[in-house]
Image (cartoon, rainbow, N blue to C red; front, side):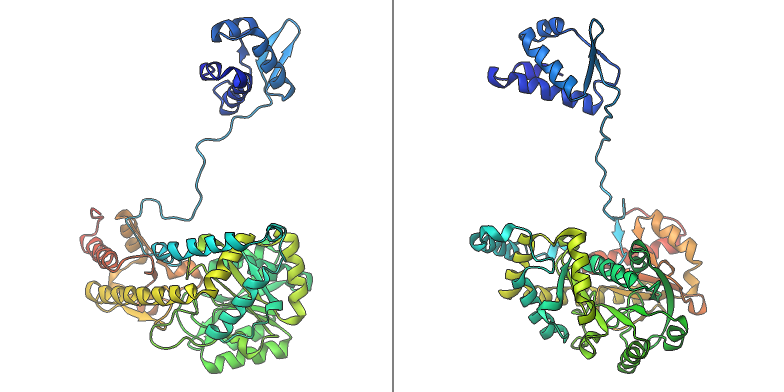
Length: 464
């Protein structure tokens, strides 16, 4: 293991030998407690000077990789722990799935690599050196300005750039709000039931509990909300996750009346508000009362979740506390990524990307609905024509649900039942599934649904 180091150029041979010994100890190839050859023996074996080996032993002993004693030889220290190998990847993927119908992921192949690269080149060509220092924790002024204009134009929000905070997605926006609410004495936050499971875990990380609140056909049910006593609630009014309903105009007004009467805060998670296929998107709730609604959104569904870029628009009373928490949390988002997004929006690239995704996702939604009608007659699809997922209620004859899911998994088809998102209504024993389609090509959608039907008919898994 040391011969390559001995063969290094004379000027770098000592450094190469020290590095090779360190790596051998770190990797476990030289285990703790192993006695090393004497400096004379090792020098002879490697064909190098004894002084080179002695110097390497002394340096690694000083660094605690080795230990030695007069007349006792040189040993690998017991204090060194070999690194874990291989490095694990904990990204949320369905390992081994042939077809993954789980919701939440856009088509990452639609990411505009060419336009994004052009924006990067433009940014690096003009970004001054001092811009690479610690940024305003709210975000780069140029990004906050173009984001505010975009959100006013596309989502109808009241967007003052001074109250807009660039975040690492809606997840960080949620935790920022959670910490501030906890500091105000809030103990728990209302969440939609069924709803996104992530909301509860994110608020729990800030020390807040969550209170599941039921929905009706218009949105969050008002009577249970009022009885709960909560002073904050999370909603997805443009396209509720997972049921797919859009809050009615009446319910939106009632929800704001509740917030004013209860001196409460509403967090609006506008996770896919740009994607409506049957009409123009309904404007954000925040535009009706920006002092009661904390508006959040991100590029996770329109560009890629891996960018970790989102935003929060805070009411005046909460802005400074949210900014202070953002500063202590991470000192701000990466400057270059913010500058690239600002350039991408300013040049019209973001609007073009939204139009491209809208066309693709409408086609894929239609393909999924058609495939379900063909292969699972009697299936109903609820919710508005929007977003990146549907709720499909398969008739009871395809159950029981546990058996159906087990057969699908055995065939490599990843599904998400509605029960994973909270209270699962089961009308007449139907099997409610939350099916994502945005990341699948229309042909893959059709083949996946056909394979699912074959699994059910045969009562066993089928080859992929």
